[in-house]
Amino acid sequence: MAFEMSRWNWRQFRGSDEALKWARRDLEHLDLAMRLTPGRTAAVQAGGNLGVFPKYLAREFQTVYTFEPAPDLFAAMAVNAPESNIVRFQAALGCDREVVGLSRIRRDGKPTNHEGLTHGSGPGVFPTLRVDDLGLPVCDLLYLDIEGYEWFALRGAVQTIERCRPVLGIEINKHLAEDGLSADDIRRWTVRPGYPLAESRRSDAHSVPAGRS
Image (cartoon, rainbow, N blue to C red; front, side):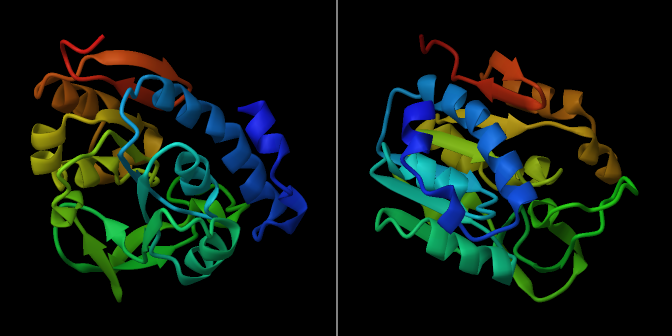
């Protein structure tokens, strides 16, 4: 990973230094999930943020589907990650087809220090899609880092998970509590369709379909 990152000219990337710093740090988690993923046909990833994650995935996957509803982040992503095998959706991911608002005010009351903390907040104008809406015949990796809304995105991906059996990379953090959920809720949900935890790093959990070595 370090070699690949060194080839990128980070000074030309759009986005604040703080947001890019956290994106670079979290690439370690994405890299771990990729090592658990034998297939390299299609990956679904959200949030797209400044494009660091989809850009990294696009090196190895034939197609990367990424979701980012915020207009400024979506524009930066298009510049930072222009690879032709990235399919970009300016939309949120969830389980209901609805329009939502966005906020950069942290739900835990702490100061917001970079744009990568943008999250859904109440009604608005930005569309919400479901992973299942893509109708993918193949999905090797589903990787979600969407500020506490991972639970809803998973519920909107049930058919895809059952059909394609992708590796799951899910951020599990305290933001779940804002919707009355806990880390155990997500862990129980993934175990039920046969996804034992393979490894965890900080707040990220990676699960592999049962029976796959």
